[in-house]
Length: 364
Image 1 (cartoon, one colour):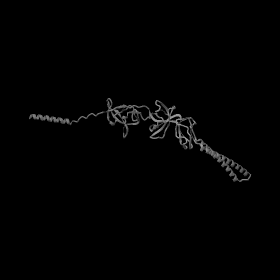
Image 2 (cartoon, one colour):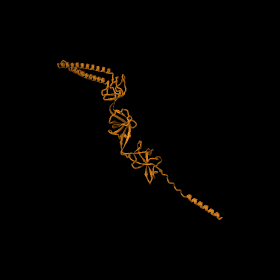
Image 3 (cartoon, rainbow, N blue to C red):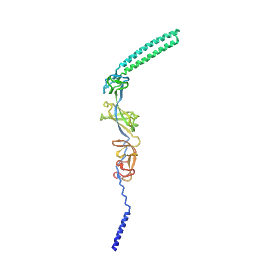
Image 4 (tube, rainbow, N blue to C red):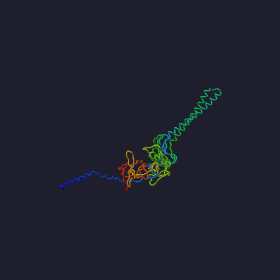
């Protein structure tokens, strides 16, 4: 009996002990700190280079056409020909215009004869009037006839001048030393006034036209010096000067910018593909930095990065930071606004980080 009491006492003690243990709150496990990779924000400098694609063109390009219509009698040029100033480009059949000159010349001769007759009649009428043998109305009529005859002479002279100009317009010559870039018509073809018959490129001042995005066009100034390279002439670089800056978009929010090579090179031909490099100074809105593409995330609120704010030794707090992103370069994204030198930028695992999350720094 005493033994049974002893066993029951041990059982009750064990139950009481287990109950007390089960009523104690379990210790909370320590949070797992996510390790991150960081880099110190460093400004990329006050200037940066940007390259844009374009094509070469002649400094002076002439679309040749006739001022009058007709049939091509001669067009001795060929594509690639080099023409001296005054060299014949094309000629129309002048027969119709020669006939007009002859007709105008005959009309002028007839008008002059009528003018002489009208003048003589006026002189006779004036003498008769002075001797009281003609009335005032007869004198006025004779004077009006003489004046009309003089006006007819002037009109006929202008018609002859016009016919002569049209005859001269049947020939088109090069206005400067040029090369034939394109030939559009051939002998015996009928062409109209203003119809382009050939394209000439004149002079050695080669230009390059590029399409500039709207984000940069306001920062391009006439007179700026740029660098030009041509795919067809590898290993050669040319200095050039900005001569024209467009003010109207030519499509897809790009604006035309023209640069002219400072030194001519006959190897550079119109139509060659080119790369034009511009130097852009900092705009004062903040330091420009280059960050890895993985460091930049985007959501409905825009693009952002995470900055690691040091807390305890080896630990930091991740803070979301909105940023203004520029171009994507070979080294990474340009950050135009939002970062300052010396800050710690989280460069990996951005998609698994939240604002305010405590993270573990490298070596912590």
